[in-house]
Every structure is written in C-alpha cells, then in structure tokens.
Amino acid sequence: MREGLKQRPLTLSVLTGVTALVGGIEPAAAGFVPLSQSFGTITASDTHSSSSGQTSGDFSATGSDPTSFNLFDTLGGTRALTGVTVTVTSESSNVEATASGSCASSSTGVGCGASATNDSTFSALISIAGPFSPLTQLLSTTASDSCTVGTPNTSCNYNESTSNPTLPNQFSFAATIGQLGLFVGPGTFNVTPRIDLAGEFSSFVNEGIFEPFTTESASTSWSGTIDVTYEYALVGAVPEPASLLLVGGGLAGLGFARRKPKRN
Image (cartoon, rainbow, N blue to C red; front, side, top):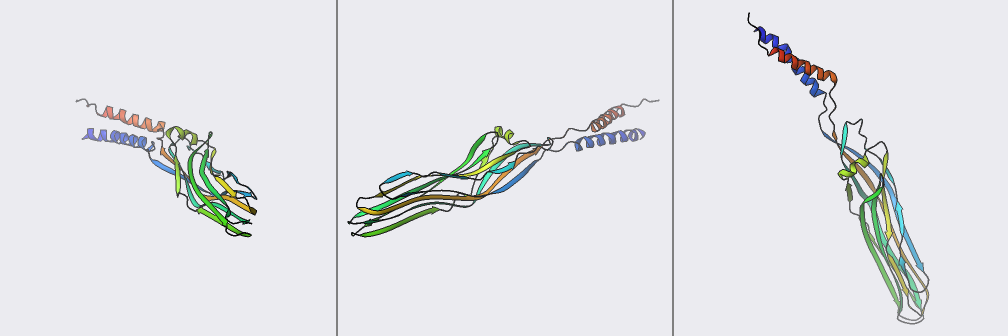
C-alpha cells in the first residue's frame, strides 16, 4: 500500500510535465486571410473620322487603375504561407463599337460605308518582385454599316452600334509553390486592372460623292473588385525550457519509483 502511495505523486508529476509540454506546442491548423478592394471604373476609347477617300487603320487606347495590397505577414514566424489566390470579379462592363456616316451624290447607285471592330483585352497585372500578368480575358464586338444613294442630289445617313455588356463574372490566379515566397514580407504589391483596346476600322466613299463624312469609334469600360486570399498553416512553437525540465524530472522520478524497494 505504501508503495502505491509513494509512486502516485511521481506519476502525477509526469502527467503534469507532459501536459505542460503539449500545451506549449501550438497545434498545426489552417487559416485564411481575405483582402478585398474595389477598383474604380476604367475606360479606354478611340475615334477616327474621315472627310473623303477610303481609309483604314487600327484602334489603340489603354486604361488602368493600380490597386495596392499588403504582403503576407508571418507574425513572428508562427504562420507559414501555403497558398495565394487573386480573384478579379466584374461588377459592370461594356465593350462598344460604332460605325456612322453620311453621304450625298449627284448620280445614282453611289454609296459610302464604314466598319469598326473593338477587340478589348482585360487583364490584371500583378507587380511583385517584377511584374507578371497571369489574368487576361479578350472580348470583341463589331459594327458595320453603309448606305447607297438611289437618286441624284440626295443623301443618306447610317449609324450602326454594337455592344457587349457582359464580362465573365470572375477569373482568378493561384500562385505556384515557387511563387509563394514573393508574397511574404512587410511591404505591398499592386494588382492593376487594365483595358487594352485594339481593333480595326475602315471606311469607303465612292466617286461622285460630295460632302461625305464617316466616323468609326470604339470604347470600353470596366469596374469591379479584386480579392486576395492568403491560406496559411500554423507553425508549432518551441516548448519552454521549464516545460522540458518538468517532463525530464517527472520521467526521472518515475524511473526511481519503479525500482523495487529492498526487503528488511
């Protein structure tokens, strides 16, 4: 009976030491840090006008709105970054192309016309330790119209416009394992929504026309939000020296307690 009583305090000390040791280690767990910002409406437009002859060319215009985000903070090394996702969501957008003009003639069967193509590329450029642009989306719309003068000394007008008001709801970028280190630190990085407007335009005016006028234009607008999500895992903390001593003492005591007492 006395042997049992002698061993019990030592056993309790071992349990106390193990509990302290386990309590000093932060369990591994996953978490998320979401960051979200809206970017303002960005626009790009280009217009070409002609008063005579046949013309053609390319549209060219750009619009952007840099948006800044904080890099992942390790908070003293207790968290390790395991994933980064950047998502761009469209709230409103419109891609438009317009071809318009007028002409008059002193003879019959003469006409004029114009066409326009809007090929807009939407992108989100990530600028961190050197820029790279993983997010892109191309949308197009076209407009083409013409008119023919049927009798002498008459004129006609034309105006054709097409638009595409819908962008894909969202598109996203997920960092690779090799890119995770670029997102860690005390600074910031930029995600820049951008429109690059391109496309072709052309117009024609037949001979015998007087007072011809053609206009081709293209315009694009876009607004929305950018979401950056950091996924992380908790890193185990180093046990305190006091906890290690307590466990060591308890194990040593248990070893002594297990030795058989000498008989008188």
